[in-house]
Every structure is written in C-alpha cells, then in structure tokens.
Amino acid sequence: MTLKNTICIVLMLCSMALSGLTLTVSLDGSAQYTSIQAAVVAASNGDVVLVYPGTYYENVDFLDKSIAINSLEASTGDSTYISSTIIDGGRQAPCVSFKNGLQNASLRGFTLTNGLGAVHFTSQMSVGGGILIYYNCNVTITNCDIWGNYALMGAGVHLYRSSAVFSGLKIHHNYAASTSGGIFSIRTPNILPQYHF
Image 1 (cartoon, rainbow, N blue to C red):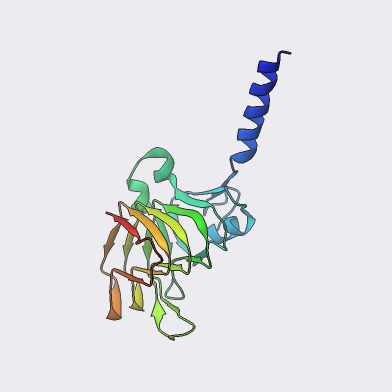
Image 2: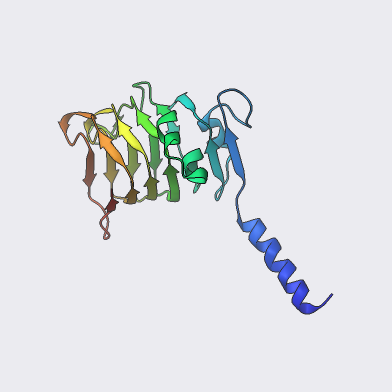
C-alpha cells in the first residue's frame, strides 16, 4: 500500500469519526425512539435527531448538547413536513429550550404550538412559549411555523443574552400577556442576533 493510499484511508476514517450518528424518532414504533426527548437523551454532540411526521406532545430540551433536531423537511426539502411534524407543548413549558451556553445546536422543519413560557428565575416572568434561548447560546432555527404559544413576554421566541440565526420562520398568533407576542430579545452579547425571515 502506498503512502498516498494510507493517507486517504486515514482521512476517510477521520471524517467518518467526526460525523455524528442519526437517531430516528417515530410515533408508530418503527424508528429507534418514540419521543424526541428520549432521542435527545441518547444523543451525543454532533448527532442528528431525525423526526418522522406526527404530533409529539412534549417539551424538548436540548440538554446542553450540540445536536441537530430535524424533521424530514431538512433531508427532502419538502415543506409539507413542517405542518405534519408538530411539537405540542401541552401548555406545560416551552416547546423547545436551548439553555446555559449551548453552542452549535439547530432545529429545522417543525410546527411549534401550545407551548407555555418558562418562569425566569430572577424576574419570575414567564418567557419563551414556543422557543426559549437562554444565556450565552448560539443556535440556528430554520423553516419552523411558531404559533399558538403563550407567555408573559416573548410568547413565540424569547432570546436572552444569546445569538441566533433565524431563517424561513413563520411566527404568528402567539399570545403575550405583557409584551412581544412574536420575538423578545434582551441583553444580547456583543453580536446582535441575525434575523432572516
């Protein structure tokens, strides 16, 4: 075996090691997991959680993991998967939470509805019914429909001291008792969040 072939094999193995696993989620039991949160618990940094259509009655916390949670819209480009892959927060907590310095995490291709804002520990106000992005996070949210969520502030999205890239979002018909039914952003660090709708 030549040195060139050996180098090519080593590089290929390294790239395979660097790419994460794909963990699949389906309500009918045909995938590895039947809940998104169970797949997140099992995931490691760099993994992808791929979610099949259905209504998932849960509150998804990324658990400080640099992972991607995608519907089939991400792999197929078919936008009908956005409306058929739903995270319903059940008026219990935010539909999706990114917290505590989470970096390089992403969410793509979901409808997020019926979330309830989390109570901010210092202000005691509920924030982020659809999506909560809290404290030194850097995340990407793509092609999501965020509606029918509730909070005192930032009923659709609450962004606190974090950076985010938003692309292809629909944020509508969310309900804030105080302010910002759509997006509320406060005390962002040196870089302002990038909003791309």
